[in-house]
Image (tube, rainbow, N blue to C red):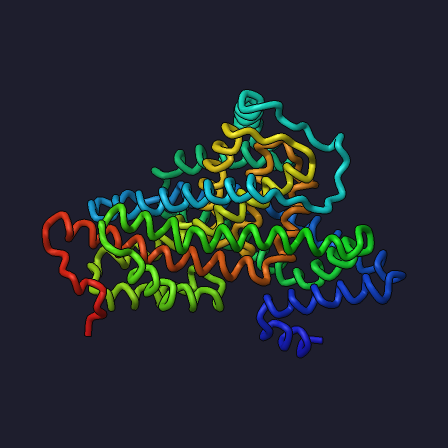
Length: 414
């Protein structure tokens, strides 16, 4: 058994998920009598995610706020501004794409399980009430807005704490992240059960909903990478942005597509910044920071899947509510780093804005894992390549302002 587990751990998780997806389809089509048995695997996987996600969000955000350091380097400020702008506008792109091509999912949800808001006033009222919820009750009931608010407040209060306290908090966050990684290792079995159960209940038409949702996500990813990000670069440099865009996609995004980890791609990005001749003292800070807070792809995933849940449940979403969702998705995306499953486990935070409960939102997370075969790779490629793109853009804009930006600024340094 130990040998089997060791061999499985050597196989990339994305390959295991793909195998689970195929087996689930085959069971649903050719062995329908086995569906009730394998469906238990999907149910257990979703329940495990539901159990660990609230405490994960609480400790990650609290640790991030408690250990946040003020950087006095003035060169970092324009980079951080670009990170935030890029992530926020990516969420707006996702909202617009979801409005144009709305996605619906097959979820096991009764209408009585939700409390749909009637408009922006109702959304804001719900948010305020959730924010002031008892922190213990917020964790027990998976009130993600309350969890997020209390984590931020407690984290800020812990900033003056000693290094030993902060180290203990960091160790706790790392331990819970490790626990989530163990749960995620069972994703292939969970996907097998979820797919078999979904096709067994709704037929092969359920696959079409996954394909449609994936198409909307990929379309938003490519639009941000090839249209929105170049536009941001042009607004700062007033020059053709595509040579720099193509370079970052080719030499950073391609690696990130296969590693599926912004953190694992940090050495690649650092080397690319060196080749571009950027300031060492700046990019050695901005690149690791970008792997934490520059999450345009995560914002797209959170916004798109949350809106898909709302459309599925018949919740009307007006423009002010959608704008508020973009803000929530941006904040949630910044908290997605270091989390196994990344943006998917932050979806309940956005779903809470629509009054969608934890039971339903975690089913949406399960759908996210089903399409993660392509979604996660493309999301990571966009996130990681944007780290170098915005770092270079901010520095080149500073050189342009000082009159020191030459025409061969993209030529790699020896």
